[in-house]
Image 1 (cartoon, helix red, strand yellow):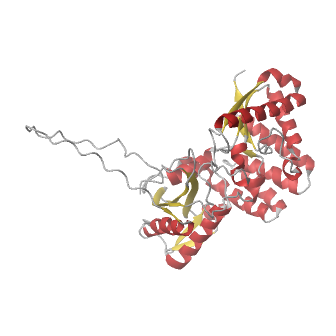
Image 2 (spheres, rainbow, N blue to C red; image 1 turned 180 degrees about the vertical axis):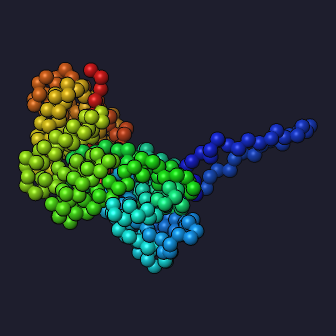
Length: 401
C-alpha cells in the first residue's frame, strides 16, 4: 500500500517507448478516473483498515512468535492530539488482535517495552475533505495505520480507510484539552510521516525513531495525569525531559499542568515560563486563548480563562527579556463568512497585543498583529467547541525587528 494520502510514484510516471510509425496513430484514451474512496461507518472503517494492516504484515522470518506489538497512541494527523475517537480506535485494534491475529502479542507502550525493539503500531485519524485533503470543509475521517518493526527499522504493513463523521467523538483527551500551548514538533511530525508518508519496506522516519524512548515516558505521564496521579505524572514528565530527545513541549506542558493540579502555584508559574522560553527559542508558539463566540472578550468560563493573566505576564516578560519582536496571529474556526472571520481574528490579536503592552510597555513598537481568519485551521470541522479549540488559537511568531 502506497500510504494514506495520494503518493506520486518515485520518478513520476513511467516512461514509454515511442510507438512505431503508422499512417494514422489512434488517439490516446483519456486516463480512467480514480474510483472514489468509500466512506464507511466508524466501526466498518476501523475493521477495514485493521484487517488490511494485520493480514498484510510481513513479519521477519525466524523471529519469535507471537511478535511483541506495542501501540504508540494514535493521534489526529494535523494537530497531533489524542481524542476520545483515537482512544476508541486503539481499543478496537487491541480487541481485534486478541480475537483474530494470534501472531501478535499486544504489550503496553512504554520506554521499557520500546527498548526491546518490538513492532510498533502508529496511526492517525484525520478530518479530510472530499478529495482527501486537510483543507476546506471536512467531510470524513481518514484512518491511517502502519506497523513499524524496530528490529529492522522498516515499515512492514499499512492499512487505511475513511469513516463518516457522524457519531464520532473527537473531543481531545484530558491532557490535550488542558494543555495551554501547542506546536507541531519534530517527533510528532515524524510520527505522522511514518504513518502517512511511507510504503511497505520504507525506513521508519528518523525523527520518530530519535524520540520514541521519550515518547514512551510521555505516554505513561499522560496516562498518570488523566488518572489523577499528578505526582507520578510530574516525575515521568521530568524523566522524559532528562532523556537526549526529551526536550519537548509536551513535557513542559505536562509539568505545568501537574504542578497546577497539585496546587503548587510558584512551581506552575515557573513551569509556564519554561513553556514560553521553549516557544520563543523555537520561534513560534501557539496559545489556546479562547474567546466568547463572535467576541473579543476572553471566554467567560472562569475555569478556562482564570490563568490567562498569568500566561500573558510570562509571555510579555519572556519577549522583553529576549528583546524579541513578535507577530501575533489570531485564528478562528470555519464558522461564519471568511471576511468576518479575518476581521474578528485581527481584533482578537489586537486585544492580546494590548494586554502584553500593559505588562511590558517596551514591547509597544516590537509587536505587530495579523488576522488569519480560518485559512489555517488544524481541525476544520467548524463545531466551535472543545473538539476544534486549536482552530481558535493565537500564535506568537518571532520575527526580525
